[in-house]
Image: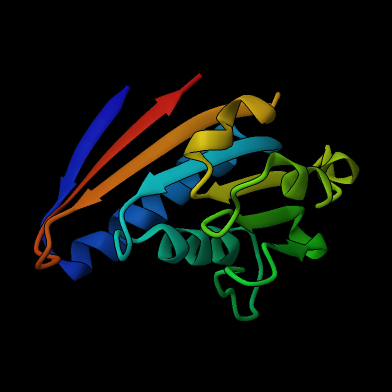
Length: 139
C-alpha cells in the first residue's frame, strides 16, 4: 500500500499524471476502484488517465448514464453514485469489456461484484481543498 499527500493544485495535476502512468503500466486491463468524497478528484484522475492512454476528447463523469465507453483506448468509466441495486450494474454489459481497464467511481459497496478488481485508490481531501491524501492499494 502506498500513501502520498498532495498540498496544491499544481502538485495534484503532476501526481495524477504519475499515478496514471503507474496504473497504465501495472493494470492494462481489469478493474480499478476509486473511493473518495465529493470533489476529491476521482473524475479528474480519470480525465488524466484517459489522456495518458491517448484519448484527446472530453471525459466527463457518467453520473447519469452510469458508464462511458472509450473503445479507442480500451477504457470504461463507471460512476455508481446513484446505484442502489446490484441488478443495475449487471445491465451495464461489462462482460463485453474483458480487455479494457474499467475505472469505477463510487463502487465501494459493490467491490465484490468485480471479479477482476486489481487496485483501489482512496482519495480523501480537506474541506477547503488544500490537501489530499491518496492511498493506492494493489490487490
